[in-house]
Amino acid sequence: MERQFPVNLPEGYVEFFKNLESFENEKEINLKNKCSFEKYDLLPLLASNAKPLLQLKGINIEEELYKEIFLDLLSFVAELRPETVPVMNTLRENVDELNFPAIIDEFIADDSAYFAKAAEELGVSEELFIFVLDHSLRPFLRIYASTYQEALANDEFQSWNLPTICPICGSKSHFSRLRTNDGRRFMFCDRCFSEWEARYLQCIYCGNNEPGSIKYMSIENDEAYQIYTCEKCKGYLKTYDERQSGKPTDLYIANIETIYLDMLAQEKGYTNHDFGINK
Ligand SMILES: [Zn+2]
Ligand SMILES: [Zn+2]
View 1 (spheres, rainbow, N blue to C red):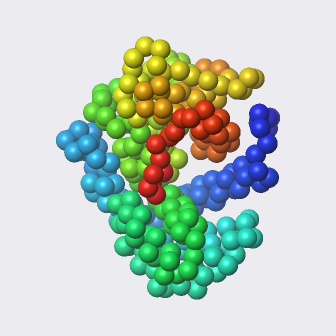
View 2: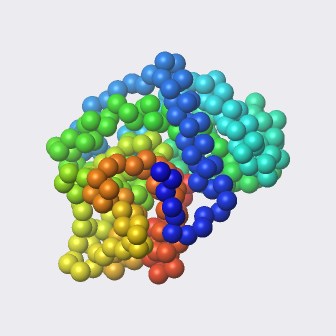
């Protein structure tokens, strides 16, 4: 059954991201046979460095494979969003000038100045430029991250104390789920699809856990989709509570669909403390 939304979202908004997710899933399946990544003993590395794996070890992506996905994505975005055609065309015309290994490195380093300058030189919107670079990278990151999900889900994994940062790819997460059988909270990374545990009643931004200062709200008749707020730092976290329906959902789409919860939280003066490009 199609989910009904409590507010009207811009036309085609959710559909665009659903199509994008299908596009990326397809690319990931095709890539699985073509690329492999070195595997590391994750938990000791994270415990001793307190940095995401990607920042510690980098990722070795074959330039031609990335370029192929990048070009396909330009066509995909141009077709679904005709207003982006001029930018997509410019990027296609300049594709041989783009230094993809450097771009991937700068992306991992979250160097927004690099992308601002590159976009300006190309004469394209920085936001769109980063969008297509980011989404071309995601199928690779998901293959890279998939090996580590068991280690992250392990109860022994207590060493990660940066709940808003994906321990694998370093993206910021603003979305979590409460697991159906025990209500434990797992953060979700929409870039590489990793999940890692965070405390149920503790602010993921400032660590506050004073009784009564972490609250939650939801919209009537839509109780599975919640916002947890912190009175101390005014942070908010969107959450899907599996216990309401008894079943999991596609967290990538749930995050997109619940833009109305971001609007609601921000209207009430809360923030997701977002900045930089890895969000
Ligand atoms: Zn990630
Ligand atoms: Zn807080």
